[in-house]
Length: 147
Image 1 (cartoon, rainbow, N blue to C red):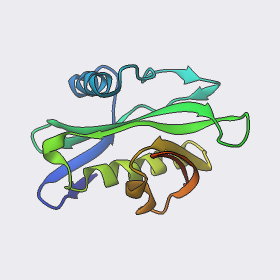
Image 2 (cartoon, helix red, strand yellow):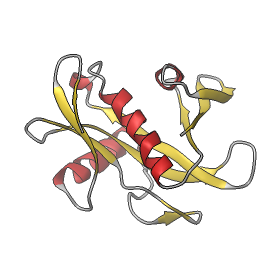
Image 3 (cartoon, rainbow, N blue to C red):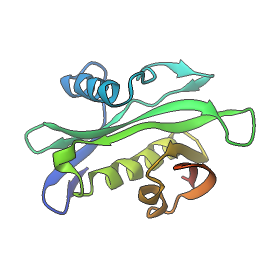
Image 4 (spheres, rainbow, N blue to C red):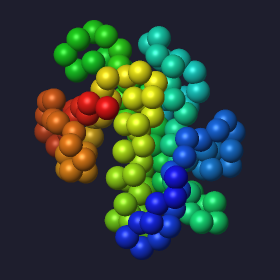
């Protein structure tokens, strides 16, 4: 789906295995946070969706969002979480992060998940999109969105 951001046009799509952009995204995530769960396979009995990538009109990587599975905030059941969300610094404030979060909700809904969770220090981004705070610890919050 092509979206006209505040300053530029971009597309958000679910990645396919082994594209140049997916490898770039993996490297960017690793540089930012160190270890990132695998983009492939299953975690805790849940099939993890492929990452979402935002691409510019020339196919350049503008940002991405990856999923993981982890325990529900109040039960022992494993649920789907946003594992990482990053927009290239020079591309921020163009609506890319917002669109990636919206597509993450749509992707998880298509896969039959009732909720999507995130653990983040930028809760306001998610709250603007209707996500609710489940818990807080210092500067970090767990949020959930009905999808």
